[in-house]
Length: 114
Length: 115
Image 1 (cartoon, rainbow over the protein chains, first blue to last red):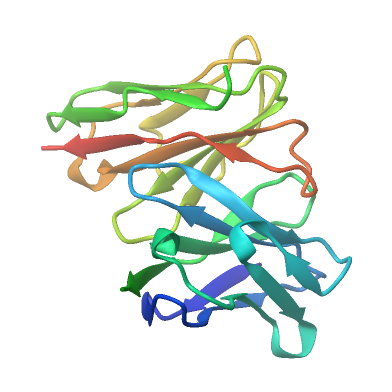
Image 2 (tube, each protein chain N blue to C red):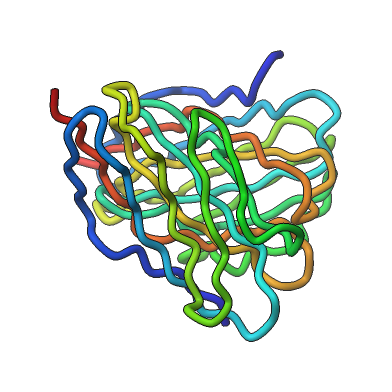
């Protein structure tokens, strides 16, 4: 069965600093991986997804993630944090069977300090 | 509408009360998902519809939870005899065809508080 682990429930960075949010997955088959962002009192918004094409995936708002099979990781990065990036971030893996059902990690809260 | 709409946004229920949560998916979207998000946790899958057919209800935590989508559009998640552990945000998502390559669009959720 697939699972997702997000290391660090809270990450704090200064504005302009590198953002690194960690995600490791467990899957017996090549996975489809996703990062979602959730702003307070909002639904989840897709940042980017990996579907076995390029291992470096670029998303919205300057975020990108790299799929590393050897490390079973899909970490999210952004070179320079902005105050508006403060939110909850979720990594997810799609369950096998192509149903679109997602298995989420527990989330990482990103705080951006001025 | 422009996005997935859920109502009510907030619901306070007394323990033992029945509640019904509504989801209006994006028009034309075939697939519809319900997730439960407890405080400080990631969303957890509840159930999945393709049109009016409920293809997977493996995530429903008990027989007190029931979901329907009778005409393949609007869906209702019903919880009978609510208990405190049912307190959570209930998220609805829809996608064009439910495949992994198709983006799922999420509603803002319904925050249920059972007192």
